[in-house]
Length: 136
Image 1 (cartoon, rainbow, N blue to C red):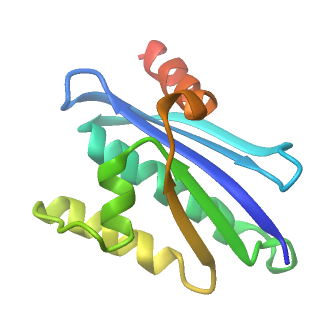
Image 2 (spheres, rainbow, N blue to C red):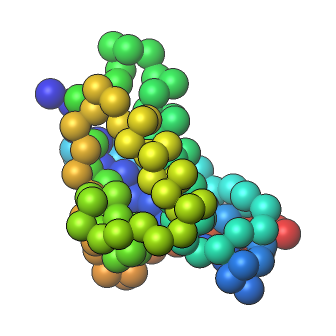
Image 3 (tube, one colour):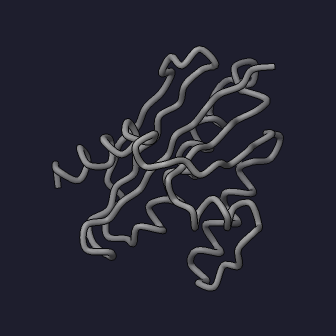
């Protein structure tokens, strides 16, 4: 079974303000197989965090069927996003509920786990967010 570890981060300067996402995908040996840092326009931190997960899932879905992993471990320093995606916390804002639903639609045929990690363990995804924001 192919397993990938995905580190996601999102941030906004101003909250809401200019926002960006960072995604780092590693194989079981820790080798980076994909990374992405891009701006997403004006958004909140929470929207950016969700969008990072969505972009990672979209990348996974675009891979040739033979190269798609069967299991994906997501890691994020956003406690809110992880607990909402896992269904442990209520989603009060309608716009976040739409993003939540998009995540679950994209997860179809994937086994996913979501884990909160300390910010220091998410430094590569965080660096991609800041690089993208610095270019704004």
